[in-house]
Image (cartoon, rainbow, N blue to C red):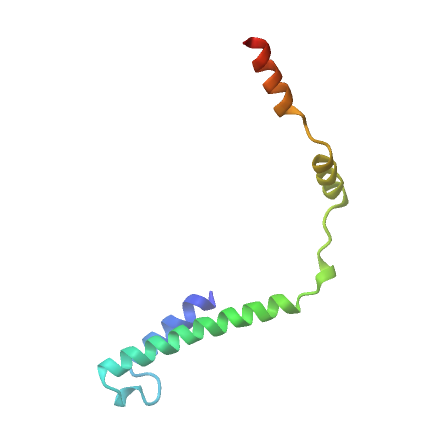
Length: 93
């Protein structure tokens, strides 16, 4: 949500002279400065999101033990469908 709100608010503030010092800039400079500041604000939001994700405890999320057991069983025991399908093709020939 902040990735949309922050840059749009900055662009709106610069274009409607709501931010201090933006009224003394030329239109070209206003466009450039507001664009750069909007891009920087998006990068700050992304950095904050990464920071919050890195602070999340690792042991907080535990996978379901039944799911893990089923997944390990499916990886260690091949289904054998490929060999039976090729054998059935040979029998049909």
